Amino acid sequence: MSAQTSHRKTVLGLLGVISVMATLAWAAVPLYDWFCRVTGYGGTTSVAETASDQILDQTIRVRFDASRARDMPWEFRPIAPHMDVRIGETGLAFYEAYNPTDRPIAGTASYNVAPFDAGSYFVKIACFCFEMQVLEPGERVQMPVTFYVDPEIVDDPETRGTPAITLSYTFHVTDIPEDYAALDAGTASAGN
Image (cartoon, rainbow, N blue to C red):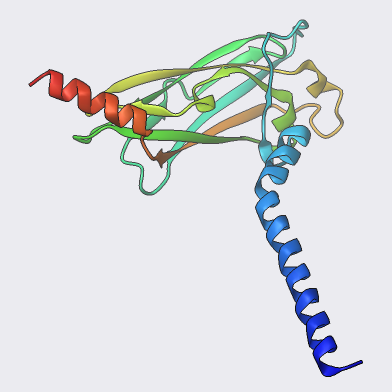
């Protein structure tokens, strides 16, 4: 085997390794997100379109937590710190956000549930976290989350007897969509 052939095999091998690593890096985030949603790993919640068809007599306390990323200027808090709901019962909670700045700011909320084992049993029906939020200067809004705790939580040895679940949201600054910025500019020029 000649030196040139050996170098060519080495280069092709390295290109193959780089391609595989790039593909894995590109696919890592969506695969991890899918894994967390399916298993509830890391406190990822479940999503449903309808309420539970079973409501137990047992209650569980749901605590609400709010935080902001370092660059997020909004004020953000839960309206109530907690609520007690029957397992399977539909709950409705509100969070409040306020934009104290002089410009519109868009934000998206990431979320998790603690304890992590309970994540797959915490089911959201509707949530402000499913969509980007845009607050105008000085705007204050109340944002709902509709949820229930799946009755199967009492059958899982890891979660049976869980006295409380904490639902946490963190708001992050997001780029305002171009169509929103154009609409906002059109509204501002119409007012002049």
